[in-house]
Image (cartoon, rainbow, N blue to C red; front, side, top):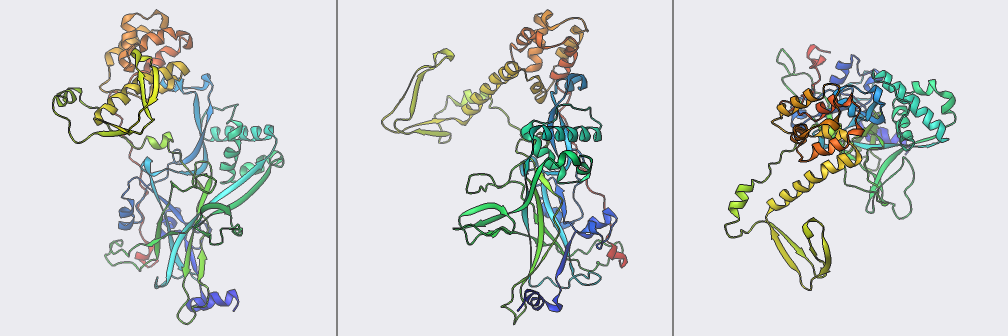
Length: 522
């Protein structure tokens, strides 16, 4: 039996399926299911770990992709003359935003689903009457590229692309562009999404040897690895198969139509998009990273009907989703979405507890024989260290001790890092409430445009100590007066002055509602 005949025998009427974007994506985009724009599955964004409940309740309700935050970006240096006033004056870099989609991790309070709608692959694309015997899922694939070109060509292309993207975003230009080590990432991020840049820079791109391939994550008993799509498995891994992720059918809804009658049932399916993974390949490289470009492909597998069990299943594939990159764990555009609150131990309560007998709780740390560290703290300069112990030794510490000491060490080293490496912009990433408005006002009055840091007296250095939350910070700023121009000083006060109240996070914007055209017989 030929493959075509087997596929025809596997399904009633011999038809497959069209795996398309859901109806509401078509309605918002003002196109129908016959338009090529309906071919890619829809990626949907959410801001709650309970997003599946919201998706099942109404798949139309999801969040808009922000044109600035939800695209992959890369940092480039910004000249002092191009920086803005206030806090921006100390930002040594700016982000260049590409047109490539970026998906954040669950730790960033962002979650994603892929949604498709099934149609029979027959004239008119009718809706399937039953999902019996269907298995719907998706695979995650990686677009891999190898670039080979003279460094000068890569630098020139990445600089041109950077200038173009900055101009498109209304930002000041940059003559430097990204580091050479990032040039390939920058070029591939944009070329993966559009071809206009290729047309405008055809001569330079002709000197770039570009090898592109689509890779699948092939998994088996020996683990997983990315391999070129269609490449036979290597020896020792004969059972490797492309990893498939499940999709589930969304239940029919009854309240979507204004007249109360339910619309005809649709075949909508969703899957949860993985944006983080603990898997590694056999060489120790992570399965998912923040440099690769990924895409999703959805499929429908139909088992053979009774009497044709010897035939292979019929599989229908969707077009790929839009390509995307994944945010890194410490992506600042992502970490700003999630707040973690910690209250330090109350020293008074801990001191009162010290008068009572030890409890059963705490952190018990056991040091094996030959692993017990002994030294003389020496008033802050440890000495006489030795490693000893012939029997295991267990010490139990109250949990509060770890937090007190850890915060002390952090508070001690933060100003050291700022002053040692002159990373003044780090001061913008912390603030204390309630703010010391009096200290800020006193410094504003002192730096009236003529007085430098070196002229600060005790009152001004104490004011900086108050704003920075570190005793002696003002004196160190005074010693570092050569690092600041006179025009910087007013902006420096703005940098270290906290807001009057805690910032309120901006709520993500939902997508606009749409009505099901089937309610009107569409």
